[in-house]
Image 1 (cartoon, helix red, strand yellow):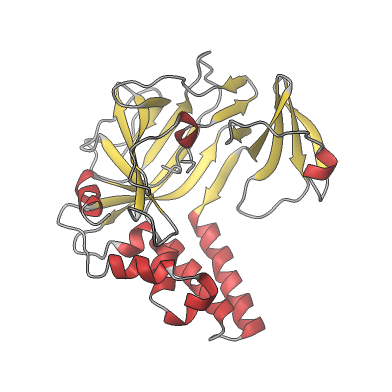
Image 2: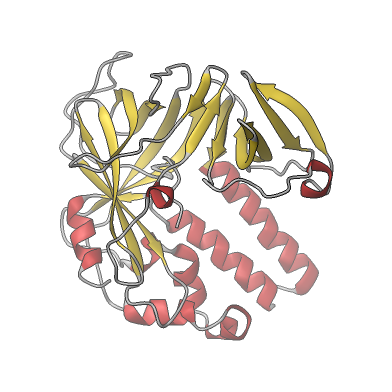
Length: 323
């Protein structure tokens, strides 16, 4: 399980009540929540738990990540489960190799309000050029069903018995396990509405290099050779809307798969919703409103609208009770 660094994000969506407004650059606005939690569902009826859980916490302008439990029932997370390396013009933002009492340090906060976070990923060389910004909307979860806010697709697909033959039994199982389970008073989540960067960067999301890398075979639709700082980077010519560009970065003598992002907004919720709405309309026009294809696209659309990125402690405790 790879946890994306914010769309907090990713790793993600955020939250809560802040003690003040937006801070000036370099300042840190404190708020009532020092911990946020992210959940990822499994896909097998044999899983010990419905979710894996990851904690994000903050101290002295630093952001940390730590794994709490996995769908197989264990509590063991490797660094590669949680961390990525990032490449920008000033160099390689290498992930930390050791944990603190709060987990792995993953970023330094430049500024933070209730709904806008700006941060620089961790680097042993103290690089500072790359700044990522996450914007969120706050969702009051009090009294609401738990199911649609963790995995929206499984929730809406699982409510539709007609889809089980096409997508399997897990969504219906997921809905049944969480049937009637609601969030208590004080539950809040953050939903990521946009992610942006002040400079191009590549997310080296795998610690494993590509064996026998041949760019002409790896990029079947063609590729572009370029540079990011002093590092060679191959970029796919197959560019999809609302998605990063597939890339391969050369680090030393090895080649690593990466996701490349250009300056500006790179993940925007309203744009994704529009894309999913179009996918649904296309399925309706091609197969009919009540076709399996259209109903699956509808579940994706409604799920995207409902899912949260991060949950506060109160909401997290309720989720843990039904895991």
